[in-house]
Length: 119
Image (cartoon, rainbow, N blue to C red; front, side):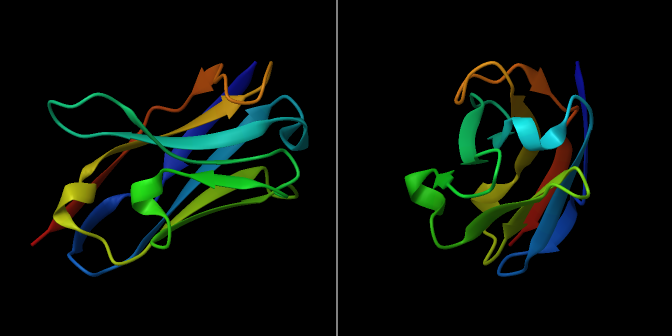
């Protein structure tokens, strides 16, 4: 079992930045990959970014490359999502997820944190 708790969401003006955190507990954090997803009102959940267990490889949604950055600190059991140059269309609930059984398949999810970008 893996428990995930996101934090760091909030209200920010367009052009601003936020850093989301996701604290994990349960299984050894450094043994599995992590991802971030988001879901805007009335839309399907979409992939944002992912990172391998070691942090050696990262993956991004094409539309977010250059503005968002995923990282992890295995000593702190935490994965981060740095979001820069935020736009109103980035408004969504952001979820972190753990890919334990197989990279790319997400087995555990956090409760989400709201990010609202005002114009």
